[in-house]
Amino acid sequence: MQGEYDRWVRPEIERGYEADLGVIRGALGAGDELLVLTEGQAYAWLRGFNQLRLAAGSLLGISDDGWEAAASNQLRARPEFGMLMALGWLQEELVAALES
Image (cartoon, rainbow, N blue to C red; front, side, top):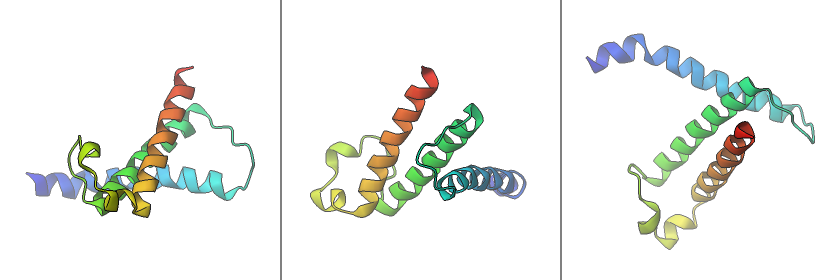
């Protein structure tokens, strides 16, 4: 069953991930100091940030919720940890902006 899912659905999901990351790349590549996002772009950024956070978490070996309390100083010193925290903060700020 998982094989069928991967064969039929996974490519479309991955195209969506790439499209969301493309929205982020395009906006950052423009080099503007102030970036005004449409609602659709903001949601693409949220999805893109989520994918980047999942990648950082995977590199850190994080697989479950509640890992923060047990995170060692060595883990916290890794650059991926800083990226994970920064992306989480950006997501929170973007969600707050969308809700206002």
